[in-house]
Amino acid sequence: MDIEKNDILLMKKKHPCGANRMLVLRSGMDFKLRCEGCSREFMIPRNKAEKNVKSVIKAAES
Image (tube, rainbow, N blue to C red; front, side):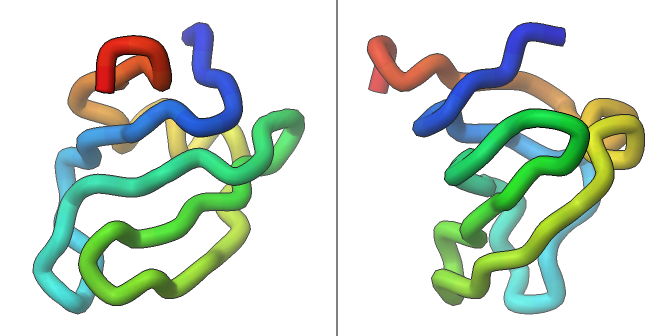
């Protein structure tokens, strides 16, 4: 899956705040994501993140 910095991920499951859109701050073996609802930043392993992604909105599209 081609996920880069500043892409927005629409997740299958919602964050505890209720939002399901996450901004990619860093990609590699782990992703650093920021919730667009509450602005909380967290790290998640790449395989777990890719399994939970519904769709990707590229940085150039938004």
